[in-house]
Length: 97
Length: 195
Image (tube, rainbow over all chains, first blue to last red; front, side, top):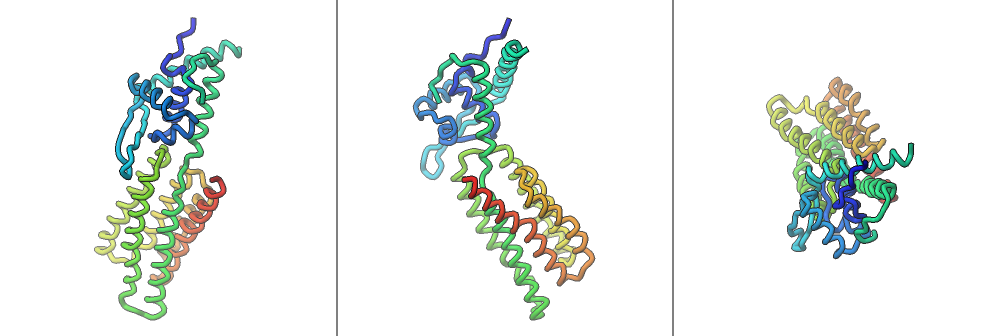
């Protein structure tokens, strides 16, 4: 019996955001938007969901008089990502014996 | 990127993770201006000091190093400007920051140590520290010219300890040329080609 894939992570845009953040120390909203090709509105909603789940920290500050949002993965987020990849591997091992 | 659809296969998930991680690999920012700033500042300092000391025999030849505070001001301007522009901080950026901060503290501490011990011993140590900094930086960003330049610094540091002070100045200029200036220009060229 397979474990269920974490529904927070099993969404294309949220998984893309988490995959970006797992490989950097921190990234700002514009960078994530450019790399994922998402719209600002959709990205905001998904970033908020990841934040509510405790998977990322969102820091809002002013940079050169403009609002700037920086995202950073949390320990809980790293654990969730690792668990998600483990479950993925289980699925793939069965499909590719 | 599609919306938050949940109906994608494990293969697609893995592919997405892979491609996102891959995009961050190309997020190494261009830091060549720091190597060029310090490289040229030290090189000009060496040429000036050599001219003042060995050619016109000016007693206050160390005035040449007034170029250091000027370079420091430009360096701080660069730091502030880059901080504003920075969209992502990679772990390589973070590691480089710690390395160069530690080296900055070392150069600062050494200025007090050599004022006490005598400046005639300073250049082999400076060359050694240039080698350490550029070796680690070059290895972090996997940039061969920086690694090669840094490795040349180690024998240069040994040779510098055995030559007279005038020749030490030339050796220092040679060290920054191979470890900062040449790799700095090559790094800038490579970055501009990629972007």
